[in-house]
Length: 77
Image 1: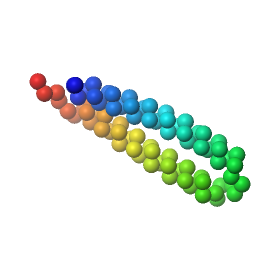
Image 2 (image 1 turned 30 degrees about the horizontal axis):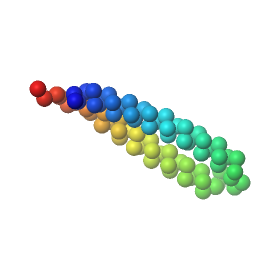
Image 3 (image 1 turned 135 degrees about the horizontal axis):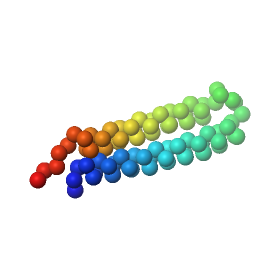
Image 4 (image 1 turned 180 degrees about the vertical axis):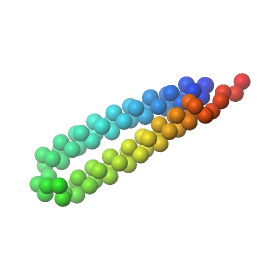
C-alpha cells in the first residue's frame, strides 16, 4: 500500500481516537461531578486529568506518525 494512503488512514484513526477521548472525558466528568462530595480536591479529578493528558499525548504521537508517513516517506517503485 502507498505510504501516503497509510498516513491518511493513521490520521483518520487518530481523529476517531480523539472523538472517543472527548466522549469518555465528558461522560467521566459528569459522573464525577454528580457523585463526588469532596469538591475540586477529590482524587477522582486528578485521575481524570491524568487519563485525559495521557490519552491526548498518545493521540498526538499517532498523528505525528501519520504526518510523517504522508510528508516524509516516498513510495518504492
